[in-house]
Image (cartoon, rainbow, N blue to C red; front, side, top):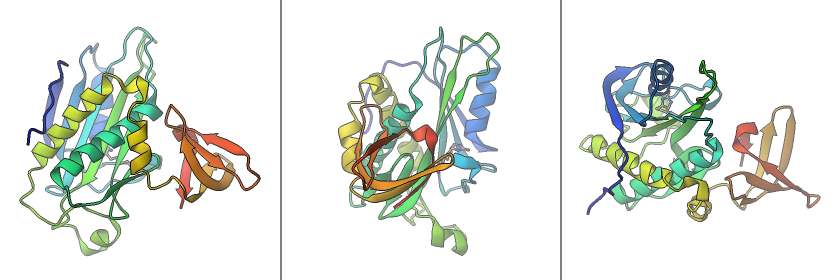
Length: 253
Ligand code: BTN
């Protein structure tokens, strides 16, 4: 099978044996220079990998894939980070289905990847807007996946889902395929043409959810996604409430 599509994007690739966090490294990197091309940072392990809300993301060597894609935006271009996160989730699952056709992968809104109902990965999109000239707002899309739990300590293996317990998996190939899918998607991401696929993969739609947005909590049925990846919740009164990913702190199912 040919896992690779051709994109004409020039992309810089940086690889590390270990790094504190590929997202933090990418943010630092973006502050230091005037970039035009996207840059990808891939590490075998991270000492301070993190997810949304400052949560730790366990990133041991040989355990998974930890990578960040830095997209430099110039001339006041902006990016829709909710949509890019949604699109990235679809890319990750497209890749995983190719490599692990027998497993069941789903996406929990907005950024969790599940395998057989357990979280095995996540996406953390961060924007960097404090650049000096005010003309740049760079974006870092971080992807973390627990691929191989062979060496996970028991307490962690209990909680965290991982795709396989099998050390022979070539994580570089999986990472390369994710990057490839990402840039293919990125070229048309504003069209949101991946949202139908995202809805099909969703573990959230059709379920009762409780969403915490700042100091407001809403409960209801996860009804559908908007054209920009926001979740529409139908409250018991019938009222529809649109929640964009940026506002959510917790989604209970
Ligand atoms: C989440 O679960 O909330 C998102 C997890 C994102 C983890 C990835 S691993 C690569 C990149 N570097 C980080 O520190 N975080 C992301």
